[in-house]
Each structure stands twice: as C-alpha cells, then as structure tokens.
Image (cartoon, rainbow, N blue to C red):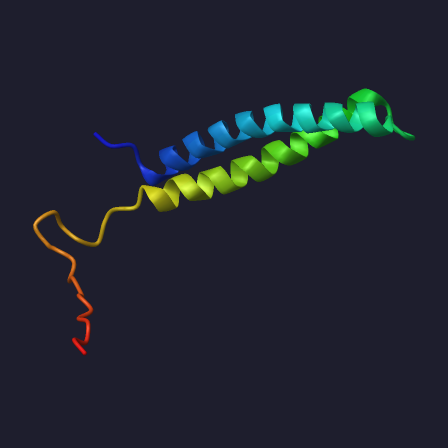
Length: 90
C-alpha cells in the first residue's frame, strides 16, 4: 500500500529538517568564525542558524514531496500528443 500524502509530507519535512540542521550548522559555524558572536552567545547564534535553515528546508521539502508524488492525470495507455514542426523547403 502506498503512503498517503500526509505521510509523504511528514517524510519530506523530516528529510528537509535534517538537511537544514546540517546546512545551518555549517553556515552558522562559518559565520561565527568569520564575524564572531556579537552580542549573543555562540550557542544561541548557532542554534538560530540551525533552526531557521531547518524550518525553511523542511517546509519546502514537505511541499515538494507532496507535489512530486501526486497521481498522474494520464493513465499509462494514454499518450501525449506530439507536435512536429515542419521545415519549409526553400
């Protein structure tokens, strides 16, 4: 049985959140090394980068996984029309 659209959305959000945490850690660490923590503690700045990127990656991956897995409008025996542009023989 195929997973439901909600299950696919949860799976996409989990994958996107995981990737976002890793990317946020990398870019947050680079930002801390280059510019320093400023007025905040290094841990709070790094966690802000990680949570922000995890939320955005998770949101877009959940939407993308649902959109990509929607059922096709065409059945397997239907064929798309083929348009062939003919050249003018001059």
